[in-house]
Amino acid sequence: MNLFAYPAYQAFADLMRPWRAAASLTRASLAAWPALAAGFDVREIEAWCELIELAGLTHARPPFGIDSVLVNGERVAVSEEVAKRTPFATLLHFRKERQDAGAAQPRVLLVAPMSGHFATLLRGTVRTMLADHDVYITDWHNPRDVPLAAGRFGFDEYVEHLMAFIRRIGPDAHLVAICQPTVAALAAVALMAADNDPAQPASMTLMAGPIDCRVNPTAVNDLANSKPIEWFEDNLIGAVPGRFAGAQRRVYPGFVQLGAFMSMNLERHLASFAEMRRERAQGDAAKAQAIRVFYEEYFATSDLTAEFYLETVRTVFQEYALPLGKLKVGERLVEPHAIRHTALLTVEGEKDDICAVGQTVAAQELCSGLRPYMKTHHVQTGAGHYGVFNGRRWDTQIYPLVRSTIHAHEPRARRIGASSEALGSSQVTLRALLDAEAHAAAAIAKAAEVQPK
Image (cartoon, rainbow, N blue to C red; front, top):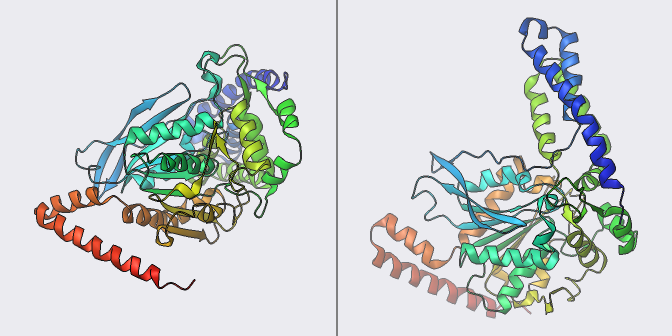
């Protein structure tokens, strides 16, 4: 374990705090004099002050800040409520204030990564999905704020959390896992399927995740395999400093993870900082602010527990336990072929440099117990890693597919209930829908029989 990295980082952060505060105060003072701030030289000073102000990390989750959403053209208020809480995570529900706004909408558990950032990194994903779904999210806590007395949190505990959250939401919900948690999500659904758990999800969407890292390995995969697991433990694991609630908890620090991410595209990040300074100095506040908002979220970092980080590196990136049929949760073998009732959608980005094309679609072969019509795959042209779940391509091309998949596999009883209420004739609609689905099932079965072998 590296005993010096975390204390050294914290000492430097503490040393920089007064300088950042001074830069913030200077910028605010200049902004208070519009006539003075209109000059280019003053705007240049403001721009440099903003860079100094931004050049530091925060370790508390930013707010989601989603106060309302459009539902069927009507603005509906949204509030956050805790559906379930553990020492390591909160199952957060985005509740629509209008009583009937989410009543007939599919319930979706959005599984956020625990990979150095907070769940708010998916703010845009949540905002988009809220219009058509009743959304829950895994809001992982920063381990440096979790006392040692709370115990360990490794890969097994992560999977157990997912199963507990799915059960809390109830039967026939839908699971959407993004990036790192796709492996844990698939494991959770497979275990629930093996148990014939009544809370099995109706559908599972896996997006840009490392299901099989042997396929088209990226720089992330190469790094994970460049050293033995003991090297990662000796050099990258630190202990939380004594002033925090999680004092002495062994963690993989968020600032180390952020540094690794930034080093992959360092020139792009430096160019963004330069652009922000330039746009601010030239008076284009909107462009500068957009860059600032991104980095305020990007620089909000969360640690990972040492056991979760090391177990993930070893089982997912070094041993390829899931695709090789060797992944265990506790003493139980994870068998994806046991999944028979949860529809599968996998999504990849053409230009993803973290989870390359081919790594996520591997889930399609692993879930061999599913009928072909229950499996769908999509590769998004031009999308990088973050573009798979955020931004224009997500909003206009990927999300419509996710929405269609979820709604197509929304359980019959909920669809019938919503349709019957809308038509005002529940008994007639129930019989019509049942008959229609029976005919559709018969047609699909017949088509499957004549498929060429």
